Length: 80
Image (cartoon, rainbow, N blue to C red; front, side, top):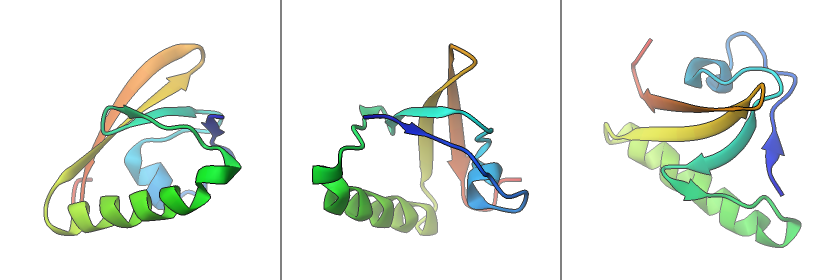
């Protein structure tokens, strides 16, 4: 029920977030996310909320498992 990232394009938003090939998303903004088919509609809503938060100057944190270790990433629109 976790989302494994693969096929990241060099100039993508995922890459700008700091995500890497084979990262597994565990939590977004401190909330554990379960990527089950039944909750697809909820994930679209969450994505819209995150984009709106970024547009308003907020930040998003993502916790991933990378090479069997937890990694915490933070992103703010305009950060490079």
